[in-house]
Amino acid sequence: VELTIEGVFMQFESEYNVLAPGPVNLHPKVREALALPMIHHRTPEFDKILARVLGKLKEVFKTTQPVYILSSTGSGGMESLIVNTLSPGEKVLCIDSGKFGERWGEIAKAYGADVHFIKTTWGEAVNPSDVENFLKQNPDTKIVLCQACETSTGVLNPIKELGKIIQKSPDTLLLVDGITALGAMNLPMDEWYIDGLVGGSQKAFMLPTGLSFISFSEKAWKKIPQSKCLKFYFDIQKEHKANQNGETYFSSNVTLIRALDAVLELIFEKGLTPLYSEIEKRANFTRKFAQDLGFTLYSKAPSNSVTALQVPDGFDGQKIRLKLEEKFKITIMGGQDQAKGKIIRIGHMGHINWQQMQSLMMNLAATLTELTLSYSPKKPLSQLEQEMKDWCK
Ligand SMILES: *Cc1c(COP(=O)(O)O)cnc(C)c1O
Image 1 (cartoon, rainbow, N blue to C red):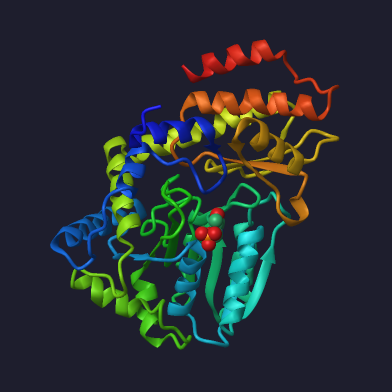
Image 2: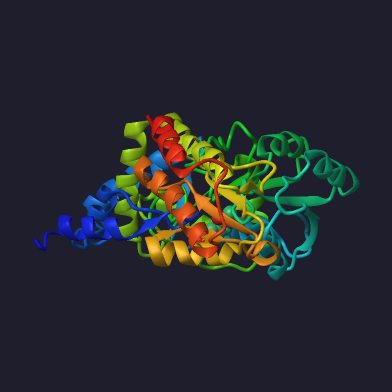
């Protein structure tokens, strides 16, 4: 075996196929960028990279406002949106359509907000008129929190509609968790009246874990200087000043930002719309062929970045996921909390080819057969295999 870097990459590629809703498979160019020798973050070379990525991120966010890079996971970005706009005691409406909605409400509570929840049934999106009614009865609401895609259930929430409603209240901000949406589907911050938006590196941005990206609207910027939440690391005003001088306030995450530069180059080579279509096509493929295998769609408003599937009767989603990984080295996710065992979740973000999608389906069928000998898909496997090949052409 030749021990070139290329060779090592290939070997890993043939070993794990990460089709989870984050982390995701890395593009070879991203892995190359991750392997580069270190440079210092206060150098003209890095300054150029930082300026370039901050510029391109604005195009992904579709905003005229600056975008900031935080060395934190997505949850840090969620916290940052809150601590920079909230004052303790203020009323917050948290849309809880799953695990991540619940988490955001908990973060707001930790900072002393008066948090009210609109809980949806898992698998369902929020009804915009419920939010409108809440705001009519509670005009003193300062912040509404919502996931664009709720990763735990595979649900897409109606952000555009929420933006239209909230934009009418001059004193209420819409903060959106776009960690599995921004970069995977159209989520234009300015056009949809989003006041705070967060993306995450290991999800739609196709990088390893460790960066989050945030931006604030003009409306949010009016509130930021008045926000009384305690903060230091996540104080966006410090970062804003540093960015204006072409730097980050704390040490820059040189390695991940260089890899981000590589991702953004790939994204803009392809174009945002073709990228989103590709992800949508993977979602359509998964929805169609998983149903042929006997799964049903869990989400009533399915997102393109992650598909949640209810497992066929008599199966345990956790066992399916574990066996698929152990036997075929394909990583997907199971369900959390009330959906544990009942669903599996398949991610469509990252560097994925059609052969990997077909292999996922065929090996899912093999896994079901291995777990229950009496299992049979709705169509013979040989027919399914041919249909998949034709579908992917
Ligand atoms: C993954 C995820 C998070 C949490 O991100 P971490 O990087 O694990 O902190 C938050 N919201 C959504 C919608 C996610 O998918």
